[in-house]
Image (cartoon, rainbow, N blue to C red; front, side):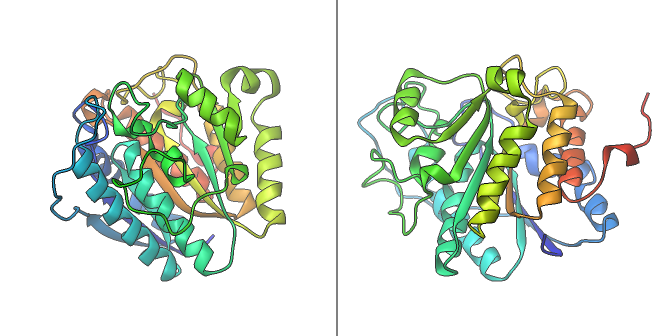
Length: 308
């Protein structure tokens, strides 16, 4: 991995109808993320919390869609920031914020990879595929749309920025799925994105699918973006999320995935999303997420002190 890690706070909560995600970046900072990464030998730059430009009003025919203009502005801003950081040779870690931010971060890093003539891959750790478009979402929550957008699916034209580069469906691996709407299921089947719901993980574990995916990234000499949603984890260990779905990944499964990603040295950018400190218990989820990031960057679980 690159030696310079850049933390970018993205206090986005326009993609959800539950307040609190805008506090996520500062909760991760309070959990000691920068100090922990520096202790592992990384040079860390904290850009602070960014803000989008003022947005012009946009209205969609789907009356359920809310905060469309603001979410588009976040997408434009995060695209530009992600593109700039990758061009500088940094490893950006985007501190969210709800998952609508991935529309900007992933489109930005995809464009940077294309400029360098390299393949961009995405590991999507999430209970949801976030594969709606603006017309199929019934909740109107735009954190359910970013993956469909950066894959170049229809339904965003005339609203979201036109993409210079899309992520190839075969370059995406989604793990931890356990809440998929019918429209999303149909779209996923058409694209052929590799998906692992919790049943497949229960049956086969995480090692085989992660290894197979990493081998594909390595064979393509590709770049790997990790988009990590708090609700990938079981809510018993990570309660600070507005979209809790029982039966998520365990503490050990999550750390194992991070350790395998670290061993691969393929990760070039990271999203940490949907952390809602307002719903947390004494910073428990923020601390766990910071610990998992440290595992991604080289700290092993056996290095951790025992806790009461």
